[in-house]
Length: 294
Image (cartoon, rainbow, N blue to C red; front, side, top):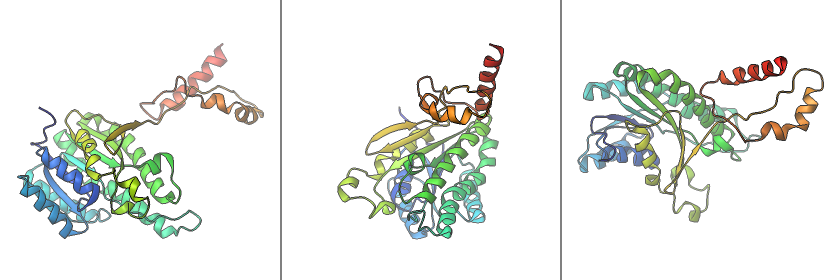
């Protein structure tokens, strides 16, 4: 039958255009009721009209994700109308690209405020509702700029990688309440990418080609703690791993030995994906105990 979201209510931020609009429309096609959130109320209303014209149900919300009171009011309106909130797609974002040497700290803070704190605000506003109903699907929009770096995007990359850390912990805290939390790193031609790349590079990067990943991560059978990459109809997964490493012990020469043997420490054969942060020190203490008791 495929993914059926006909009993679900979804909020998509930054949904007046680009990726957010594509995500909202894709979720609506699967039956979800949509809150189309955007700072531009007219743009949000236009997307709502498109969803309704196709037989869907949606409401517009003119709210900035940086305004927690406005986000709370948006969520209360959704609850008043539909009685639940099942899906949150944190998509809203901005760019303020410059090399770090030339970047104004106000632009650094602004990008963090929109991407990171905006996602925190929206997630906080739905968290108790999702816990109470024992169901939730939360998607953070990360980026390859955060995962792998990109020149001129220190602020954007820092914010986007912070969302991976937020996802890791909220997935743990939400597990017992049926809340699954994931990240999506999209590649798409949108207003945010205008002028950054050549037209021929963007020709095959339609926003709608990313949205199937959102639908999958919003589904009842969605994973949790996944970092999906999507673009041009292709899908990949990123992992934060820990190598087997080496036990080098104590002593003043350890730093020198570490530098000399860094290739061995970095070797990826036998690497693992820790389920919790504490696995690092547990692994390290076990390695020390093995050497001491050998």
